[in-house]
Length: 536
Image (cartoon, rainbow, N blue to C red; front, side, top):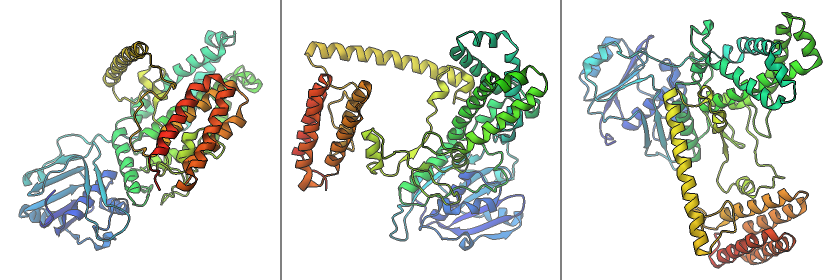
């Protein structure tokens, strides 16, 4: 935008009062607009997220903003005569810009000029919620008009999704199944396969059945409607952090926080939560206590609900597989901050511990633990939600989107298989076969000048072969240690470290003939890398 020398008039309207600033610079106005990315209910809530968007290009405190509180008529009269103006209307959830103010997109990025020499480079990310109306190049008269489109902000009733309503549904359904032929079939010897089918069916019914306490809506509707927006806001905070900014959580005391829409991380966690509780119901039925209770009748629902409630609390609050607890994942998603290993988040006491353990046999994880890629951020990609080929669990909001995506997957798979077949035929005709299963492109990996990342993939494949042979931990540790010493070595020690690394590879080739070609190829990469200047 080219408005640095313009005086921009900014007005704020909400149910409590109105505010006006008649002469603001572009950086301040853009930063104030960015606050709307968080979907605040009013002006005071918007000001509370100033630290999440502020840079040294603007004032440090919102108390320094030259906003004058006045009546709505005076505000609108000032806007009417302004040459360049912005109006934020909280009642109508509408952002209007007019006059000479250059139009902005709903999703925008700006690089603000910093007023100091801090490490933060000054990126500003705007991601307006989909239910906010954006009117660029607006007529002044439109500010008096009632909004024409309804405000369709997704409302999430977490008491229903996580609370007694869900637990009672699972308990009642589990007991219904227990007294059916389906359970008899499970007990007949195909329990693993058939029980999984029961789990999928129960989960689907929960998500897709209209409920009176939701006004006729289905629970699935509460999972959707804002995933892209929520993820973009979170990604913007990650980008700020990686550019030198602080990591600050959005407030959890806002008026709309309890019913705020889900992002993808909470949605994926909720999928796992449902599966965990449903499976726990089956396990309870198999127990002596559960079987006895199930045969007694009505009181069994109460007993199973109490049991599931204990499972729920334990599952939500305890770390899984060395990662953070589900409650921590959910809180970070709801407060729009990414999960970074060891990253302190202002506003959240817990800290995600590193997911790359010191005894991990994966050389790629070791590279990450050494900080080769900067701070390691973790997220759930949601691929497991699609494994059952059921729209009910999909991250797609509509059936049409899901069907279109399924068609795209099938087309991609067909194209990939055809290309793979052509590649194999070409390799046979040329008499060339790769030593590696996972590394087929001979070219260097972009952003890997030392070649260490590509070597890490090679070492990882060798480790995988050794793991398949069983009881090879000594060889695996020796290999990983030799690689770690080599890639960490400074130029004076690099030649010696390379020699030791090659010796380990040669020893493995002698002990395991299937590793001969891999060992030879990795050694040639070592020689090639050593001929290039090593980074200091």
